[in-house]
Length: 508
Image 1 (tube, rainbow, N blue to C red):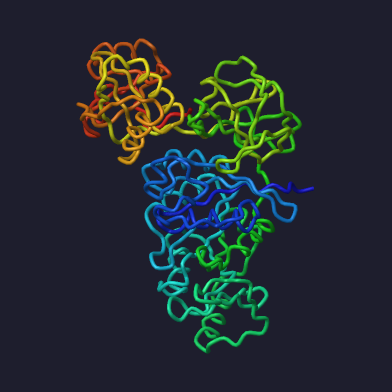
Image 2: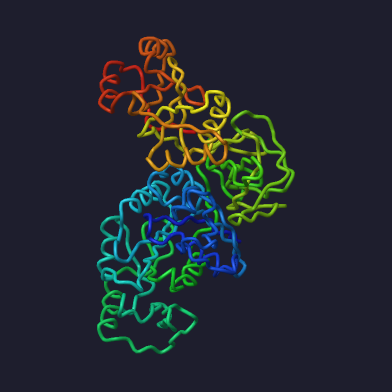
């Protein structure tokens, strides 16, 4: 009996149309009744998935939100990932919690840098990918060129499942290659309003393209797709409703149900009776009225029941989960039970952290949730010195969420924050002000990069730390961190101290 759960993420480069597609999937799945224009400046119908103030101002997704909807007996858990490259770390962790992904590509731009980066993360975990070529109602590159680019750059077999009947000004609909039917645009908006042509006459050049495509590309193979070797490709327009229903259908029919998750001592199968899960994200202050902190847990095995006691690996004290939440953007429902593949929110006051495993018996630990060395370091300067305590709480909270990392230097009182990208700094200041009422500025730090350090012999580690105290700091877990002025310095110091390991990633 396969599970009726499909847990998936949408990955794309910024501006490829991910937020619009997210909204249309929810709309077609019956989860929202109004597909609000995402870009309508000043309109209060913002994308339901983007709730943080800075997201609404900039029209970008910064936090990964979770949305659940049901259609035709299948429960879809959609994890919205930050499209902006500065949040790749958050996205990386979100991708550990899904079983498949939808890759959105702009028909005019093809594969862009961020899409490729996110794809590599999926490949590391053999996450199967369905490709959606968006915006075919606008001028774009030829379909063959796009398919060849996906095949070449990502080294994947491509299986076209639909085909655009013209693009841009010549756009006349989308042909379903399985049924031979064409979805046609209607009205002034040229959107899909339900008109399907059962016996279409295709323009000769399109008929020829279709013949070539069916002969030249691989046929869809479910096993190759689930192994991550082949991607079915759908053409459409999220804004104009072309291809969205077909995408939901493809996820329902082809995307894998919950898969076994990597763990120690052995991978955990979703069929295990014991309840296990891991926290892949912590979000503070989702509701500005209440200073709440919610840990997002991916349920990996067992049937979770409300009120259950689960033990986190972090500190080993069992916690009773009294009000677990199922999400739909800003709307939430208390979950009485949840099944493998579901994402539940656990309200807590800082006890749960990213990377924690929760289980009925504390003898399992999920692996593969990394921390990355930051690429930008800044000193935090408080405008009001009496708010030191609030600042520490805010920085710890945000480090817990994985938005930033915070380092406490051994010498000197200015704390240093580390981020992977510039936009995270803007979000940090915006949230310090809006959520914690702390006015702070950022100053250049005397360091450029950071590495966690480790050694097999504690004496070697202590000797190194004593000799380099001016460059030593602790992270929020009290792990020793070496702060370097440049990547060159990291290499130079590493050569001088062969017994010390300088780590750019650390398992959480």
